[in-house]
Every structure is written in C-alpha cells, then in structure tokens.
Amino acid sequence: MTLLKENLIVHKPKSIRLDVSTLCQLNCVDCYMRKNNFGKLGKGYLSFSKFKNFIDSNDFIESIEISNSGEILLNPDLDLILKYACEKNI
Image 1 (cartoon, rainbow, N blue to C red):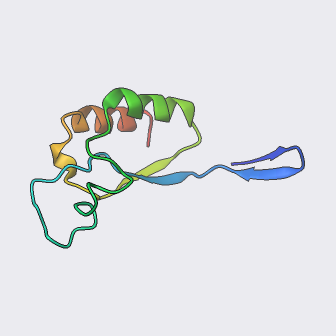
Image 2: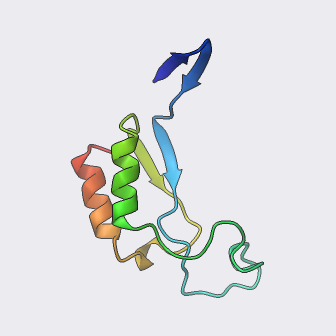
C-alpha cells in the first residue's frame, strides 16, 4: 500500500518480522541477547493485548514472520496470538 502525503510517498509494509519472546531457557555465552543485560530489546514477551492492538492499528499487514531473539514457545500468549492472526487472515 502506498499513500501520498504532502508530496511524500509513504510505503506501508505488507510483511513484517515480529519477536514474540526475548526469553530463553538457555544461557549461551556468545548470545547477543545475553550481553549487556539484553541490550536494547528488553526482556520479556509480547502480550496478546499488545499484539491485537498492533494488528488492529495496522490493517495493511498481510503476513508476519515470527522472529527469533528468544524461545517463542515461552510466550504464554502464543496460542492467542496465532489464533488472532489466523482470524485476521495473516
């Protein structure tokens, strides 16, 4: 989707990558996520309510790749996230 706004072309992505968890049960010595107290990404997981709000606010998104900066299966809301994405045909 492309919008023209004040002589600027704004491209909205159809596809995104999204981390749903930065938590991990491992403690790998060289993992970039473990250095400097988890860096800029923080530590935790994406809640269903934040995911839903993001999707509802960005209806142009057609596909999401669940990225891997942690173990996605540690996210307790993963089933709700996947179900909502399917309901939205994402």
